[in-house]
Image 1: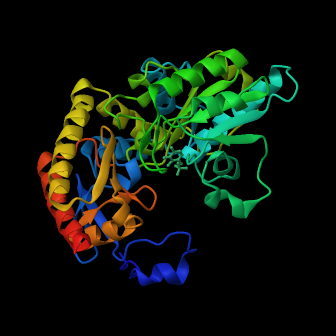
Image 2: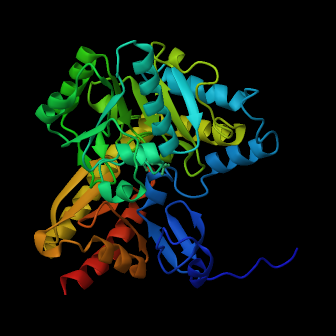
Amino acid sequence: MEQPISVTRSNFNDWMVPVFAPANFIPVRGEGSRIWDQENKEYIDFAGGIAVNALGHAHPVAVNALTEQAKKLWHVGNGYTNEPVLRLAKQLTENTFADKVFFCNSGAEANEAALKLARKVGLDSGVAGKSGIVAFKNAFHGRTLFTVSAGGQPKYSQDFAPLPNGINHVAFNDLDAAKAVINEQTCAVIVEPIQGEGGVIPADIEFLKGLRALCDEFGALLIFDEVQTGVGRTGSLYAYMNTGIIPDVLTTAKALGGGFPVGAMLTTDKFAPHFSVGTHGTTYGGNPLASAVAGAVFEFINTPEVLEGVKHRHQYFLDALKTLNAEYQIFEEIRGQGLLIGCVLKAEYAGKAKDITTWAGEEGLLALIAGPDVVRFTPSLIIPEQDIDEGIARLKRALAKLAK
Ligand SMILES: *Cc1c(COP(=O)(O)O)cnc(C)c1O
């Protein structure tokens, strides 16, 4: 075989559209919660590919599902159905409130489908102008034009105007503000049970309950964006299960494929028929390869042992972070559920989250930010305790640099 083309980090600047500013090393392989770069330097992975690699790297369950399916059938298109996608649909519907699933390839596409479904249901209702969407400030729903417009961070959408209209943003966790804008013309309310990108901010249960009641009153779909919180991330299969509130539509992606791109929109028999033949579609969505991997990942995660393990690791992580913080006094608050953890910087360290993750990288730790003031951890759901210990030791060295 020919030698592969030799590449370096600086080639990113040569050839890649500059929407990202990746770290100055290139990961080349991973195993469990460890990654190695081109120089064979080792990193502990507290980022998990942004809440994606739920089983860590190269987990045999995922590798076997992928390679077995790869030998059989990769893609046939949606003019044909396939066995892996039907099995995955059965798993998702049997284990959630949902009766029906639409598959796609990403979180943004899942939300795009959810918002389009809501508009279609609104149209079919016969109520004039029932197309309004209520969303929340600081929310993140993806980067397509519709989903970035539903997101509540104008810096991501304003450069792409004119934006789709009929979207109203109000303050997160402010039920009165929501009440003031939800009416007969509202077709959907879209909300994250925990705002992930926005800073790891949990929704109050009373807030979600209130949204549920308002949606019922005005005939609007309640959409839970569980792209980040889903598939075991909070210690429950889906975060709505922690709340006692059942949405009409749920979107899931990120951890669903454990690293293989896949997304899904889940809904009920009441709303699914509005997406009749030809109203929406996708080329790759529900392909056998993605579905086979997702099915294996889902089966592995949806067990009491793995889900309980997430809760246990949450406590273990929190204890370690609190011990660190007692020494350095850098975090004002440590919040989140399961293995979606946000450390909010004290005012005197405002804006330093990115510096911390850069220094963490130098110490051999992958970590994330959630806005300029929050350091975020979304590791593998099965990260071993010794890797948590080692990662915390490396974080400690990074924080020591900041404290100086
Ligand atoms: C990551 C994320 C998305 C977008 O998912 P992509 O796969 O990047 O399109 C949407 N919603 C939430 C809550 C997310 O965290």
